[in-house]
Length: 224
Image (cartoon, rainbow, N blue to C red):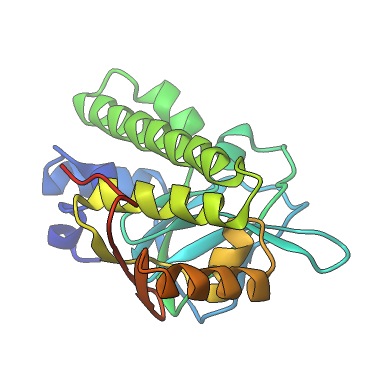
């Protein structure tokens, strides 16, 4: 494992290479490769391990028995996933975690007992602070999705999502991490209906879209 690469990951922010090495050993770190479409965690299972995305990305999905899929979030490079279930240990997962592309994942023991045993160590305190900050950001992102799915119209949902991305990136031209089907699943929309609405918005001059790259025009977004 390249410790220099880990220095750039938020979970290990402000930790020295020696401290990162101690933490990785303590959390029983193990790198694994997953090909696109592979289910890393299945709904219904329990786990004491969480994942850290070293390369690629994963989707957090709700898949029901009738084949309906809802994408709740996407975890990109440097993001963690399944940490809540890993900390609770015996709580069955309600979601699937699927490799969105060929990905390299660092599997880690969640460290609940380790946090208690080494809570007084300065490096453990820094790790816990980073862990809490990441979890808070994830909760914010998940609550943000509720804003995007709240509008009753397809256009309302699309504009809510695109506006949020543009504000976050401070640019009206950007590439989203979803393909068309994934965007439909994320916004709880039918793919054909979504594509039809995007085409209509483009003809009206509100947006320019090519695959997953968007440019917003007129008053669809306020970029500071």
